[in-house]
Amino acid sequence: MRTLLNVLWLVLAGFWLALGYVAAGVICCILIITIPFGIASFRIANYVLWPFGRTTVHRPGAGTFSLLGNVIWIIVVGWWLALTHLVTGALLMLTIIGIPFGVANLKMIPISLMPLGREIVRTGQHAL
Image (cartoon, rainbow, N blue to C red; front, side, top):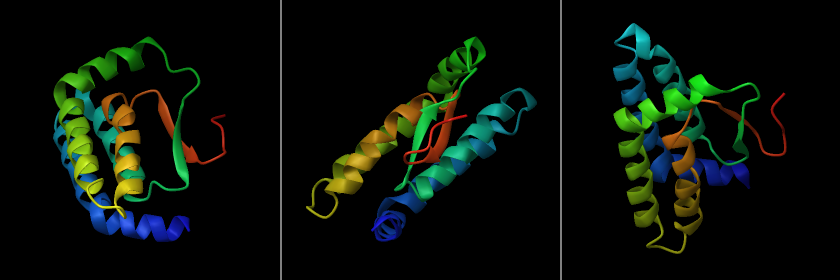
């Protein structure tokens, strides 16, 4: 069932959302100081392509620098990525088939706003 949901997700929204994250990652990798943001963006792009069966958890040991990085992330790219998830989720919820995908979009808003200090794991698995 996860595979079917992931394939439908990829066709309906995942590919286009992942392109947004890849674009943000490329922009962030232009400057040396923002490379960690680019890496986080590429990591989320991978998650956005195939989200069902995976979740995000807080990474142990993530502290003050992750918090400061998340504040910068929100200001630079996080707000428009979250807005993209919000709009895409609302549009997907207009149809009955799209409701689970719209809910999945809304669940991705927190990681689009604060990706640093988070880890993507399979559902039911905990961070080490």
